[in-house]
Length: 112
Image 1 (spheres, rainbow, N blue to C red):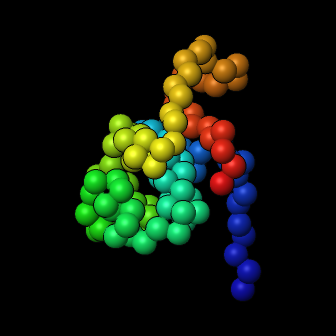
Image 2: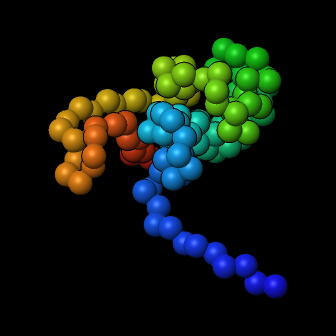
């Protein structure tokens, strides 16, 4: 038996699409964590090596690479990026046309 599926256009933020609160912050944290994971991978670091570099314990790195981000603030993720010698630039500007409200967006200069 075939089930009828409904297709819905995405907002571009899976957390918003799922109706989660703090959707933009969750997406920003996910993107920052993705950049950290990519840098760890590209350097060929083990979780123990990454933990030493980031100043945390290995289970923290495990949570990070598995996307378990509830214990990580944006500021903490930014510190991890700096520990990996990645520069963070914060740009503030007017709300983009078409957006209902201003929010947070993470963009990477480096292609991972």
